[in-house]
Length: 240
Ligand code: SAH
Ligand code: DHB
Ligand code: MG
Image (cartoon, rainbow, N blue to C red; front, side, top):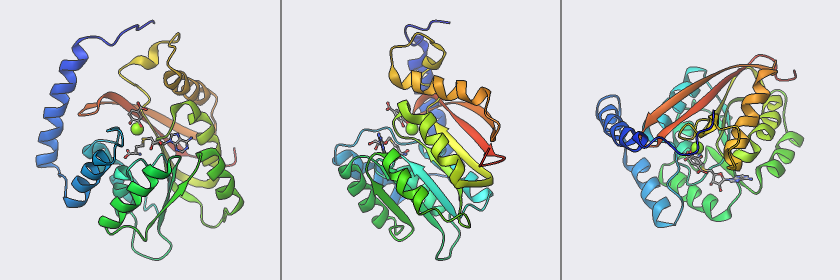
């Protein structure tokens, strides 16, 4: 199916999704000084407003804590908004860590400032550089006795399949891998899309057809971030 433009109704749905997100945040749980400061400081420093929403962040943290994740890998730090939820989900103890990979030194610096303000600076390692290169160092130093329990893939969409293939071998059976932005206003259904981000997501979904290392589900979301979605994969066998 070709979807040359987003249906016009989507604007109205996003506005409504924002109202519902506001209700959810005033009932199920809202923001705090560190999260607010993270978004404000990131905007002031010129970072794009593409962090996960508050409720999406809460969902990521809830899932990470539900599986007792001690070692978390994030690809795409931006200003560290999602990172805060992930780091807060860690249990106490010296070995609990988030490793977050970020291309841009400026984003990484802003993220470190935001994480310091949130008193999470000692729980998160922001690694600067192209994620593919950072994976090389991670794999070399990888301790099979300390696999990742939770992975959040949220960087350049062109490379999702590569990040997925590099991350899964570093996890344990039962680990969760989340891929963000798999719907993109529904643009993902357009096989002829000239948007390389859409094509990146489509390659990832195609690859999942024959993927035996994980079981996965797609969840579409509507809220303050518009119409989008996550893929949620549970690792069965990291080595295939
Ligand atoms: N996870 C963040 C949002 C990440 S936005 C949150 O929800 O708060 C995507 C980030 O990926 C940007 O900061 C961008 O600079 C980074 N990125 C883009 N290409 C990358 C690459 N090749 N390697 C590592 N990071 C990359
Ligand atoms: C974009 C990237 C994201 O990670 C996101 O959540 C929303 C938008 C983007 O590159 O446009
Ligand atoms: Mg994203």
